[in-house]
Length: 401
Image 1 (tube, rainbow, N blue to C red):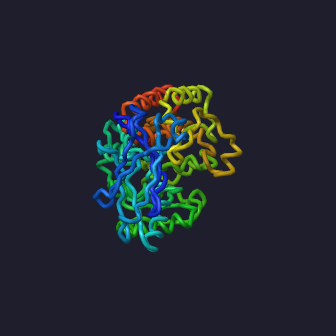
Image 2: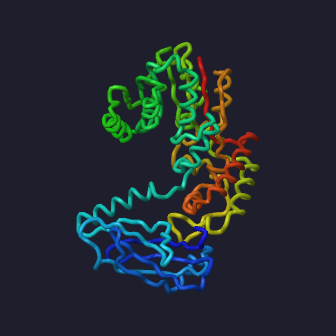
Image 3: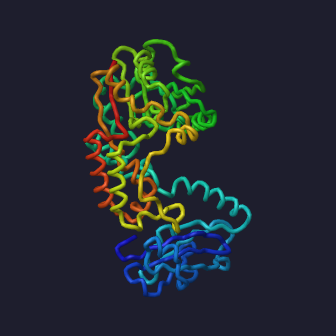
């Protein structure tokens, strides 16, 4: 919500009907007029009249429904729709959409919606540039864009006289997007990448080829801990949000030590929180206090605006986590202790997550949509306090054999 109190939501945008709700929460009794622009030109306007009781119940005083048929103004193919308040010109939060006409456009619209559902809602911390840059600043002192960029920057500075490392290895690489960033940074010349998903490997090989890295990324579809048994063959072991999926962290880090050459480097950016996500009572209390203090509109479900999110955080039973992903946080609570045992001189920086990985799930979208970065920074300061007190869920590390 902006300072004027104008807000709302576009429920659907189809040729036969564009509908949703709008509200002027500062002046809930004032009539609301919306303008509908197609391809940069105003097509029509409408006055919102009928009350939207679900939005009102969610804290949006004076919310009213709207529905218009834009078919007379649509051209064949793709049309850019923008919904704005009149006379101010303030845009509806999600009021920019693509509306298609014709069979090909209908198919395109369907897949656009599928993809937009995974990218347009900023529901998790790693989708939020503001949080990612803050984490990088905590790591290296610079507000760098890009996941793990702070860790990469430190490694580039610390090992400048040895770069690029000749051979790197990564387990649980997915499609290799994180490892491509390492290659692009100049840290390593070649990666051997282990992954169990055939779909991820196929995607990774395609993306590596498109990026010109096909000769620098070797994908192997197997368990790396069993597939690579030689000692001292790599200059770099790279763990990026895969170590917490290992069932035996001790074995995974011992493997890392053995495959590294003397003087070889381990880089880690990973979840290091409680095994099977069994948060402490103290951390749950902090998160529930945070949720309880949020303005009600921030608890709206961004995927279903008429519904409210839970105002409490609890523990998910381990059996439920295992049912979804047996490897999720399987032994994560042992990562930092085992790292300290095998690499006693390792540099470790706790990067938080006690709040941004719990209370901010889903509500993050509403805070970002409102551009309420002052509030977000205050919540991240609470997150920092949790990390400083030992309640961290993420950490980065640099270790040398």
